[in-house]
Image (cartoon, rainbow, N blue to C red; front, side):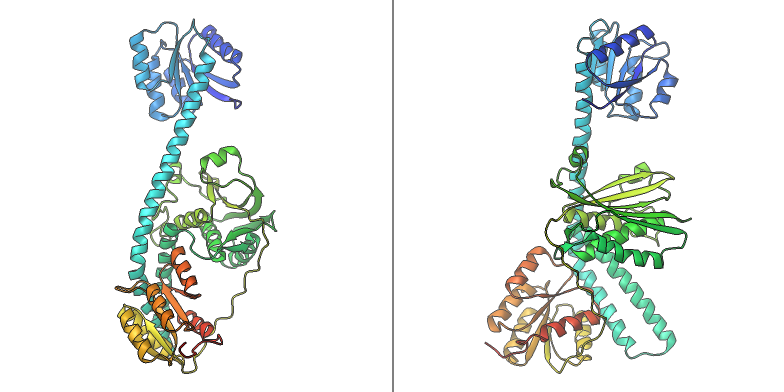
Amino acid sequence: MSARLRILQVEDNPTDAELVQRELQLGGLVFEVLRVQDQGSYLEALKTPPDLVLSDFALPEFDGLTALRLLKQRHPDVPFILVSGAIGEDLAVAAMREGAADYLLKDRLSRLATAVRSAVSQSQLRRENRALEERLLRAARLESLGRLSAGLAHDLNNILLPIMMAEQLLRDQLHAPPLIELLDIVETSARRGAAVLKQLLMFGRGTSGDRVPVRPSRAIAETEAVLRETFPKNVEVRIVVGAVDAIILAEPTQLQQVLVNLCVNARDAMPDGGTLGIELDRNMPPPELARRHPGSAPGPYVVLSVRDTGVGIRPDDLERIFDPFFTTKELDRGTGLGLSSVLGIVEGHGGFIEVDSVLGAGTEFEVWLPEYRGAAVEEPVGAALRRPRGRGQLVLVVDDERAVLDVLGASIGRSGYRVALASDAPTALRTLDERRSEIAAVITDIAMPRLDGLRLAGEIRQRRRDLPIVVMTGALTPESRATCAKLGVVEFLTKPFRTETLLRSLDRVLGAPSAGAGAT
């Protein structure tokens, strides 16, 4: 035990106090002592929790049992050892029942150092075990909520998708300014609903996209431009990148989401302005940090820090900030899902988060992600938004939700394609058999009754091995992605999506040389 112990000694006799301290020194302990001898001074000292309390039993204004009870009310994890000149067996047993770690007689202090080491070690072990239990309970709670959110995703996505796509269909036909303003409201609300749903799924599922080697420094550079353009002028952005070449395995969009969410939280914590600091470095987790995160992998980490000089987080709230739907913001300012989704993404990437906050002084979030030692790849620059058009190809659309099916058909049909609609997999297979050589591509939902989209894709492959298939889903699981890969399905649409996204997927699959070929 090499760390310096902070010992609170409750003793009214200076000679006895020196005797106890000398015995601790002889035992090889490194410590600092604050001695008090009355209840008022004791309560004042307890405002800062010590590492250990050594207390006499008989005191002028109160006794050792009272000191023990006052300690356990305020700091139940701090160990308490009674050191008395004369204590009967009944009092000793009562003290142990109240939570004392040990008791010793002043004329028998030879085992004092051993008792202190044992009490402090046991206290630390209890704290670590409780922290681990809390993490396990939280993980179980998140898993349950994740399953619930996944079950809701299908229905909620199918509600939002027709709204988003119908808004775009109407926008192509309506030109009166008042109507356009109403459509803008519809679009904004639908997008907000889609974003909330995405966060709800994210905290439960963590990461689900393909991971590639990426440089966090690039994500910071891209975010910096947005922050400087959109954040209030009284928020100063300071960026220090000490590991420009650091690489992690990550899904680029989700890495960007982590950074943006943390920066937005920092901005909201500084309503009167302040400094937002972003730093990137690499580090090895010290042993104490690794113990706090038992699932962390050994080796170097890339550390992304987001710091603000805002109002800080109350200690009681600090324990709950990652809980889904917990927020200290106004109802119209936050959903309580931002930090939950951030934690889901980080843990899904094999990392962990450290938080340090001081009321009135600000908060710092440290995101630790395992460093990747392979080669980096350049993230592709997104193509300009455009709306590709078909050339009369017949597209089979399959979805069990009538509203989704109708709006998809209308959107595709207005973009140069012919459309065949099927509300379930058996109908889709009959249509494919009847119009075998005509159908150029299939767009199918995954979650459908009787025969789901993945099994439908398998049946289609039995009939036409070359037919392009686009899969729609609320959230693509790794298992579903692996099944799609075996079936040669490489295009995925995450509901809800915009018309442009759908048409670009069709354009890609129909641009292949074999697209739309006849039966094999």
